[in-house]
Image (tube, rainbow, N blue to C red; front, side, top):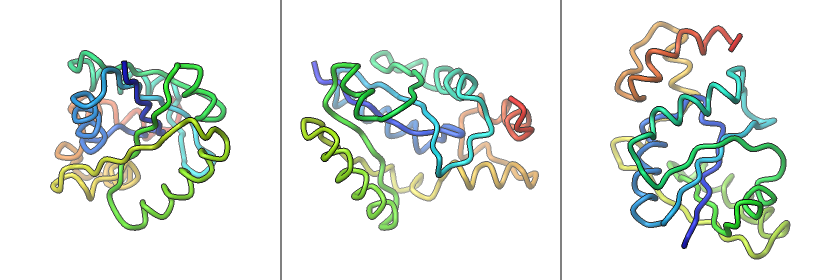
Length: 161
């Protein structure tokens, strides 16, 4: 059985993320959406809430599991008896950053491979950061995220959850 781990902060999970998960679920036997924290990204929204929301959004995809993780991604991947990491690529800038991550992960555990998927063209411009910014300015985010996220966004923006 081929298991792939799709890590990220998913703050919030967007239609671009969901597109990658759906396509990965057709390629791999088991997809683990691993939600964590990042020192480089703002995650005022609690890890528990981000996991709960992602579970709701992805609930209809049977071979997908959503969970949280802390610590090194490579340690988490091994703890789940996987050896594949899934990453999304939207832009050339993404590639440069992701290429760095691949190199570091390879040094940490050479048995783990990284596979990349690009989102559908009509979703490639969506980012969680832009979705949060649009929402914080009172804009309509319904074309970028699941209705579950639209409903939760006002509370997420409070930063107290």
